[in-house]
Image (cartoon, rainbow over all chains, first blue to last red; front, side, top):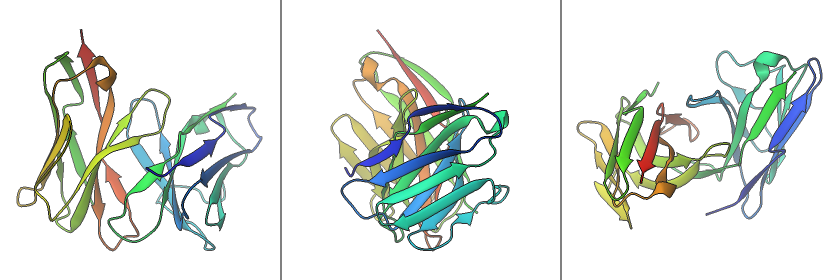
Length: 116
Length: 113
């Protein structure tokens, strides 16, 4: 399958600071990027969907000003958690797709964010 | 929107036995059903998928069945091995919604020696 590289795998930051997570598709063009959040022992919850060159579409309840998504190229999307708080601590996972319906997409390795 | 239910939440089997995980979905327009395996601290990995025009698909020890009428699909793992221990998620994809997947709640599979 295609390779999606997500970095960092783990990050610890202080409350009030911002953290950027990168997601790269290494061998294909990702026209669509999905960002998920996963709490311990729970399922994946979609946060937002972004298409290359367009503004991200956020799911209900997700603050767009807090979780900034940039998808400026077909191989890179970033998620920035701004002014992080301990309740933002979670496992964040990107998923890159080539777009279109019924198309499989590939997950990154995930980023464990801990806000202290 | 789509709603996916998954059962059981935990499953313990002995090595060599079979494991079956079942999911139901609500949106009859869903047409793509992937299964993911997630190991601790890692992202989900696609292990098998099935599209709505197919009733069954098999890949070595893993098989998936789909019943569109009943709107349910199942994952079957035969001859389980300890390395099969992980959390498994089913998902359903609805058409016309920009490739949006809805995930089940996950099944923690433990294969014991």
